[in-house]
Length: 94
Image (tube, rainbow, N blue to C red):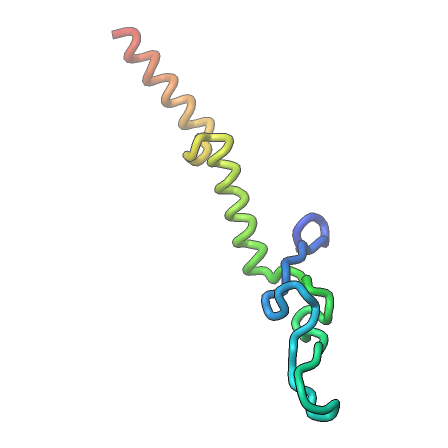
């Protein structure tokens, strides 16, 4: 299953730097370099993310979320919160 119900986010093509073309020699056209459509992105400049890039992007997004929301630490489970509250209450009664 792809990201967001079948929608696959695009990334800028690294082979053509997002231009959609690469400069190549074309002997049949004569001397010099010519703009040829990039084969990796079919001349669009953007290509769909592969599965590895999607998982890396999801992991990075989760880390940014934890950094912003939890101040850099990972989320605390309900059991951990309950135990911490119980220990604090126990220490307060001593």
